[in-house]
Length: 523
Image (cartoon, rainbow, N blue to C red; front, side):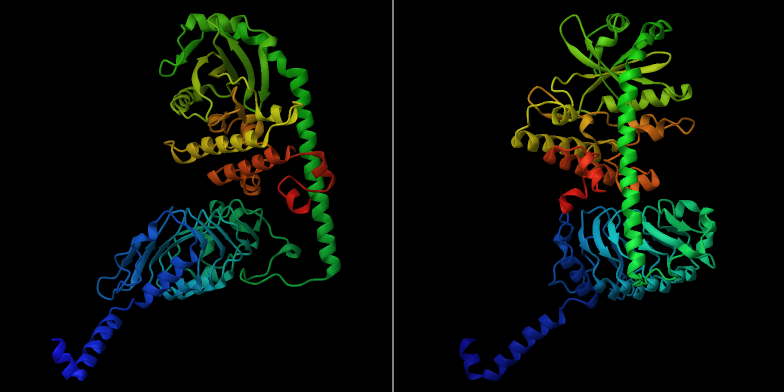
């Protein structure tokens, strides 16, 4: 064969052409190239792109991708909850046969590319639960086949473009939990949706949410429009007003903290006197998985003789007592006053779920005593006290290694609640006083699940327990809707508190019109 090729060099040239021509014939399709641009923009994921190979002729076998059987054009791109981090690149707009784009529940950031308006065959667009910012492009009004548009739980700003009123096939629409402003378009399809589609956007107005728009405060009619440059004096006025509002809010927070401490010191210890009367009305003890090796009689006997000297703390969820048994074992007892007798079965079922949650960085719920007027939750007693006490009330300074270990332990406990529990648990009140320490300064997250237990539409208690000022995420304060992300924000505040040794409502922040989140960049 080698002799033949040397004698026939033209034949060798033909073989080379055929070889490279065959490779060219197998080049990736234009849709595949657009998807590779999307993959390149993503800086992190859970490995979902391992099947995306650029040497493939088409992307139809890639994970999360579905193509039309005849044309081989991409019609579905479905990659929700794959820990994608990065922006959505404009190349996605080249997938002009796309019918479904589902990227919800990731960590995508940056602006929405106007080029998505080229995907005029889109019927389903799910981008909720990311960190997408900027404006809603007016080009989305060109997606005339769209049936579902969900942009909720992002950080979008500006107004809702009037062009969205052209989406006559829209059956599901959600832009809640953003920072949108101005009037909601009311001349077309958006009139079909009620306030649940818009909740959590403080500065929106319109008849869909029963909020009258003030002409002087209306935003530009097109959400894709950038804010105009206005008079410097007006900008200065807005800065002053914003600063005054911030200082006022922080002063209010400080006043509430002071008032809470005053109430506890003066009235917090008085509810112990009701214990004996309360237990006489008939009580029972529930133990989880044999975690309490005592009889009901033994526990009730101890509860009846407790006095105010047993109080070791108080918080939004109730007063905490130290329960010492005859064999030397010590437990923490949290008293929660019942607010609705009709919810007893729900309460018991949820407590059983919380009692089954076990992790080395979570405080163990061993059981509870059910009395006519309250629930007495029995937890492990942590001798190291709360992180709040260690950081702010004790003279000894924590070593840096201990601080890092506490941060890691609290993070592991919170991650377990968010990702490994079934159903997942949102804490809602991550703060230093809810991080308890054992004798070796190992962190244990406490009070998880209690905010949900105390939700009651007929009671004011939800507004008391759902988070603590200084730790609350801005979107949570706007809407009252707690998510894993609002927990993570509170945890970030906690980390700053551990590293700086300052409370989130420290007086030095208030004097400067800041909070602990804005302090590092202005220090």
